[in-house]
Length: 216
Image (cartoon, rainbow, N blue to C red):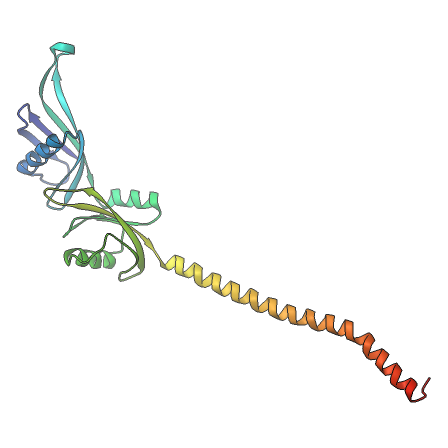
C-alpha cells in the first residue's frame, strides 16, 4: 500500500501510495524518526492514515565490498479491514484511534461517533469495566500502538457486555426456576414422609381409644 525510496542521506526520492496521496515531507519525517530509533519496522501516520512499514537498505555488491545506496520502505495500510481481522481474532470489537481521529474500527457507526467525541473531549480512560455507548455497554482496555512524536495511536479492545448480561439474566432465571422446583419437590417429599411416619401412630392411637371404650 505504500512504497518509498530514499537515498543514502535519508532523503526521500520517491513516494507511491496505493489509495491516498502521501506527502513526501511526512514520509521524510517518519523515516528520520524510524532511523533515529533504529527500527526496521515501524508505524507511520499522517492525516488519518496509518501504515505498518518495513525498512530495508539497498545494497550494491556483496561481502566487504558491499555499499549502501539507499533505503526502500514498503508498508501496509491499517484501517477498518485490518481492524475487522484483529477483532475477529479477539472475538471483540476493536478501534484504532488517535486523540482526535479513528483510523479503523469494527464498532457500529453510532458507537464510533460517540467514542470519537469522548476522544476529542479527552475524557476517555485507558480501561474501564463498564463503558456505555449508544448501542451497548462495553468493558475495554487499550494499548499504545505508536507513542511519541508526532501523535499517539492506541488500540482499544471493547468487549460488549450485553451478551454477558443476557447470559447472567438467563442464569439467574434458571437458578430461580430450579430453586422453586426444589422447594415444591421438597415440600411434597416432606409431606409424603410425614404421612408415612405418622399414619401408624394415628392408627395405634385410634386402637387405644377404641380399647378404652370397650370396642375390641
